[in-house]
Image 1: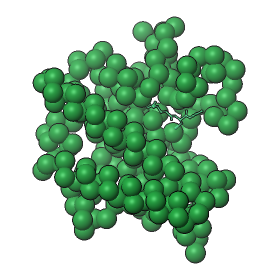
Image 2 (image 1 turned 30 degrees about the horizontal axis):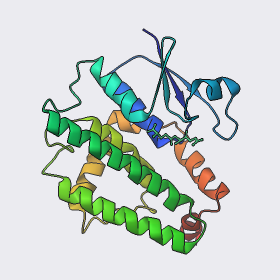
Image 3 (image 1 turned 30 degrees about the vertical axis):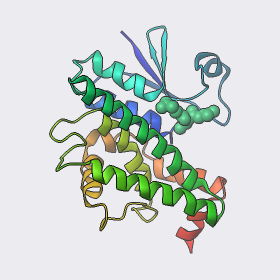
Image 4 (image 1 turned 90 degrees about the vertical axis):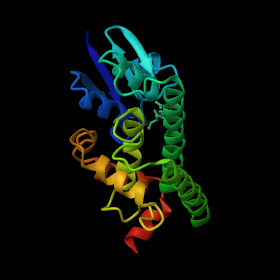
Length: 219
Ligand SMILES: N[C@@H](CCC(=O)N[C@@H](CS)C(=O)NCC(=O)O)C(=O)O
């Protein structure tokens, strides 16, 4: 079976799939596209015109959460809790992480201070909810590393650009989130989930969007 991931170099949703692929030591090919000028074959292939898309031989899978569940299921299914309620809750938190990724993007790309503050406040509230949900770790569900970890990790990677100088994590009020994020960011599969020039590309996207927070960084 040939697995072929279609990616955009700064997309955190693709990073989720890469983390799972690497965590599971699954062989795959990767093609990077430019979402600003998506090639015709991609528009034809991707129902929502979004990345990630995973080609499984000639079949097409889309949506990062679905792709990750598939990758887990073909390799033993150990990244989802066995209990149906625990599994459903894990899926709900994966969706929560997706919402946070959207808010992080909106915050980072906000042109003005008001919008920036609005998204930042939402994210701080969301991170406090995650803080309450976390136990003693090391992972989201305690000892068992799961798809919730692979779903949140790209949030922490994107949040950590520029040596955390734009971070929304407040270590004093979010000690569990802080420790969990550090643990995730230290994993090889998370470190290798982004391209070598990821930070440069990510900051370039912020600059192109006239990012308020990037100006703060320069000030
Ligand atoms: N719910 C989707 C979100 C994927 C997504 O938003 N991808 C962005 C890039 S990070 C995209 O392809 N955007 C192109 C577009 O919206 O046209 C998933 O989890 O896979």
